[in-house]
Length: 373
Image (cartoon, rainbow, N blue to C red; front, side):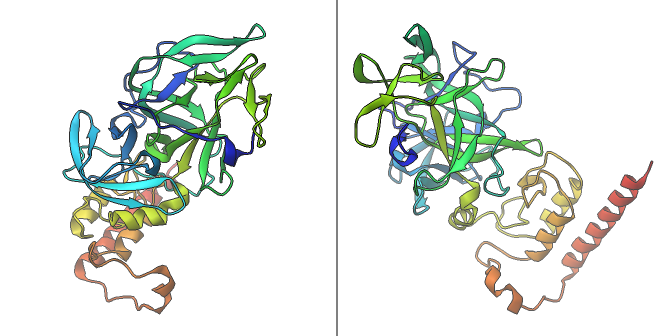
């Protein structure tokens, strides 16, 4: 295969939104939401691809899909006009604000960049979900042509590694393997902007935004690119850096722009939520503290239930984050980390003292219960 920087093919479709997954053990594709959602209800259509709702008022998508302010983002059949764009330099990520309020959204994956490796990922998109005719060379099946039918659909895979794709940004990388019973899939054209979701703490969180696949393959007797999902490259060809055809040696790869590598930039563009602002009203106050208290020590948590550090659990670390931002608003953000050492700790207000008091009581209750045998 050619160097990664040269082989990726952006997944832009033509016409209506299309793309998503050819699934190895599902010839007719997967076109309904799984019982545990896996990012299904948070993925909508944007331009000729997709996007993922990440707060009540913003979605994340791919820059290369283009679009203009005023164009609609459609989620669960409802159209939301867009009002502003924010691009993250030197990446394919775009944060878009909408007019209106999403009924649901996906928390961002907030673990360390690179921690996604080896984890199961769910991806959702729109389009070529059914297996077409088999692709065969030398009496060996290589994969399937993309079917013609298009609709919202999904697939699964296991992340192999994260890569910089030759200096073009940080990407999650997976490969299309012939595995039964795992809903193993790979992207098809038009899938750009859709989400790659990882389950942490019982919650599916968006960890990547679909970017590309490796270059198209060709048959031994025809230099035309094959629009297909390829899991076995035997007998197929690709072009080398000198534009010469050489034998293919690898199955098809899919790439998604890594969210964890760009969390500070994404958060800056969002301007929300503040750490501790569980109800997203732009203010960290006693209402947010009550939300945290009601879900304290619970697993499978989200930001909305008090999991402010994104580890899937409401615990004392989350209470400390709330306390550190108590009384702040979106228009009065915390000081930059570099200046933190020079800032005196403010005199605690009565509600903040109550916050810490409730936290210590909760911590004591948790500790005593965990010591019981």
